[in-house]
Length: 307
Image 1 (tube, one colour):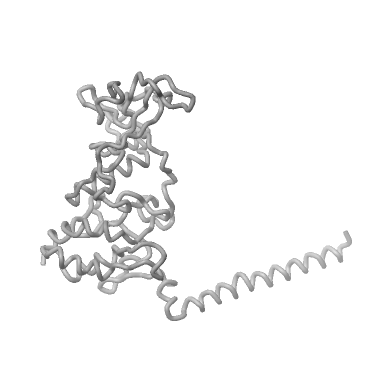
Image 2 (cartoon, one colour; image 1 turned 135 degrees about the horizontal axis):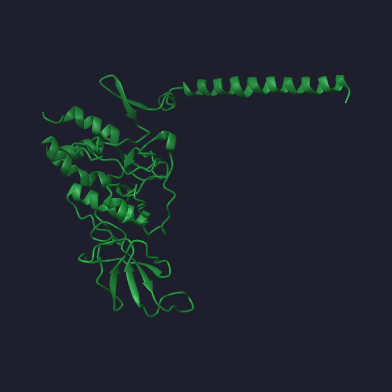
């Protein structure tokens, strides 16, 4: 290639780079910024920041935790839904757990490491999605004074799942069980599993290190009501992990606790909840919801703790 052709080609490429830099790096961002200053758009563009006493305390669009330093719920506040974003509502780690509905078997902790003082997670324990739901439901039920039981959950708040071992039919289903093991409940010999007998076979507790994957994994529904008192958004994280809202049903079961701590009647708390309840977008899309941050700030203003 001649030197003049080389210069001509690269000069054209350089000019194209300059033009595209001006368009995409300067003009387009400036245009979007100008559009964001229009009335009705400006607040959202600035992050929908909520202030209290002149100081920013959060965003209407991003949830946050209302817990103490140890992660325990603060009883004077409505609690948000769970979050799988980092340690909770981290915008830089937005996302879900990526666990699906078939994720029902826990990874057990190493008992020797637990005995050495390690936490369950450090000892290798990884709860399944089912156990996470069961544990949260039991905890919410205890906090709110409602029935925290749920289908396919044990009374102890883990997934009610058996590994059923025995001959199988052509479809792979066990036809004559010889063993049934409660895989999510490692327990001591003196501790009974959540189910005593399954199809005539005594149910055993799982033992660490034994392989139960040869069995058919069978979730046990149990006697819990079909419509649990603890709603779904109280036990599952949103897809983003940043959901700032809860369902009216989840708000409703928290009213009595908040009213008691703030020394007001439940009806007074419900009146404030109603102020921050939103319906479906355009009457069609989404579900009714309650913004937790705005609700809690208004409660602090209207019924401060200790007043």
